[in-house]
Image 1: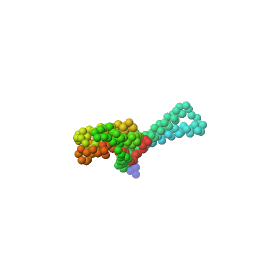
Image 2: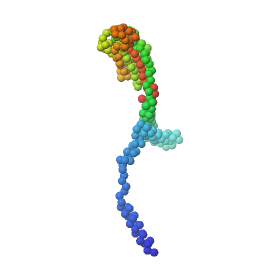
Image 3: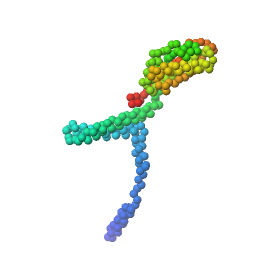
Image 4: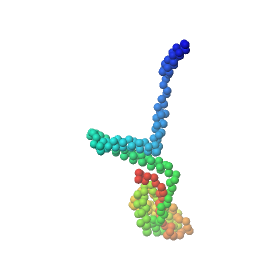
Length: 232
């Protein structure tokens, strides 16, 4: 008969003691880092900006519905709606850019280089760095291509025949390559897109004039696969 009377004070005491214990530790830095990890990286940033775009778009759409239904609205509401729509557009663009970066990273290993063209740019007389024959059409086409494709590049490779010393022919090849590079830049190519190589004497018998070796060749290389070209 006395057991219920004894258990009641014990229950009260247990409740009091429980209330006196310290609350569990709140690891704010840990939780913050875990949350930040969700929006980290290109894909996380794409999702984040997409969510921000959706929120801003909802605010703008709500005002538009008010206007269409002739509901009450104030002057500030219109300005806020337009700003919300513009904010949504900015976040959407940032989302697309982040997604593009993610796609590029994912597909990067699959990107490969493809040679688009390989042709003679100019021919020279023995000992001369002034071309007597220039492939104007091909130089113009390549220059414009490099201008409109900033990620593309081109090799400019110059040769000489074996007339003269090896050192003088090396210098001659450099001047020939420089001349063709100048012509490409005039047509729109950027200097940093050109990989200039002066090969000097081509293979063959010594002190032998050979028109096929007094030449500068051009070859164009660019990624065969491009992600989101319109966003760059």
